[in-house]
Image (cartoon, rainbow, N blue to C red; front, side, top):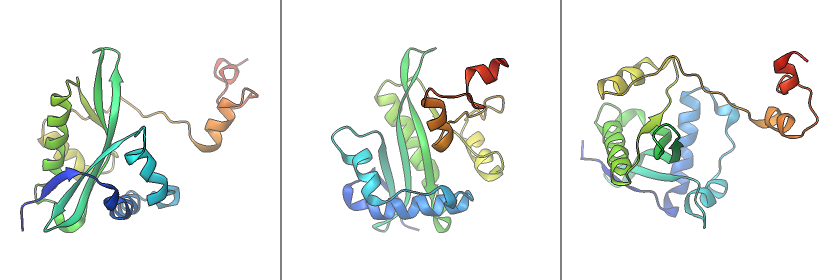
Length: 174
């Protein structure tokens, strides 16, 4: 198999990145949440104020993987960090070293930028990924849980006219 090339994503990659995001959503059984289009993603990667960055992995000139990431911040370290939102490698290219190469690329980028850490999440049922990340020296932190407000719950919480299960009065039993 040819050696993979890793490079920053370009606007010409939007369609294949969206295809790969769709494949990732299918793998994670989350296709029902998928809303991304090349048009909706473009301003967030390539607009005046990008919210995220993306690198792609190419094999023989074909994009077969991506990693989408952004800067976060650690109050404890008082330094920015790199947060990997999603990494996906097409099944035919798994176990080829491409996933590892993408992670090394991002770790180097975090170090070059002076970031204090490099974070990502993994689904608890994805045992292959967990073993892979642990083999790289990553700590899988089972005591941490992701908290999220999205969609209707986010709207209800932000509207100021609660009470709902999200309101402080509900939390305090008032």
